[in-house]
Length: 224
Image (cartoon, rainbow, N blue to C red):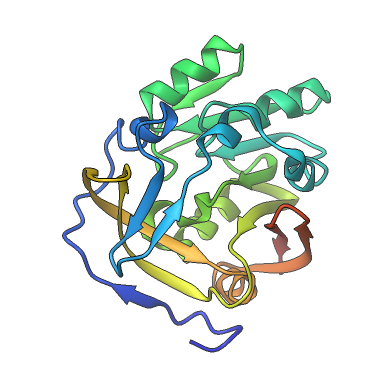
């Protein structure tokens, strides 16, 4: 695809969907890579999911009102927002992630992000960090879902892939260094060169972007 195009590169795999333990092996350190159906392997950042890094500021500073974090994992961003006095709620399908959140006192619900959620249409910000724009394998559908959660004047804060990534959709599964762990599930990658086009299809406009020196990329989208 060309930069700015929302036409995906789609790679088929025997996708089975998500389970409530799909990402548990990554959260516990058993799986360190995400294998894509086209053969690529991407490093996962389990330590960052738990503890964060300096790049988190690029997400947190854009969330100044009530925020819902979709795919919150162990809840570090919800915890950080609440420490700043920002009301926040985590959502994750993983029982292990939800237990981690509750262990650190983070408000969370265990639910599919496409199911009914608290505060529909009243959130000021929806957060999609750590590659969670890939959830469900259809970023346009996911951003439309995020849009539906927003109050008037709200925004979606997305962590995207770097330039020249484009839009990729297909199957993915977790791996350690030698073996696949678990079944294929639907996933997507959205690069900074594709986020504007994907956003437009979901009724959202990119109003700001940023790159952190650690190699993390962020986009801020509002209704447009």
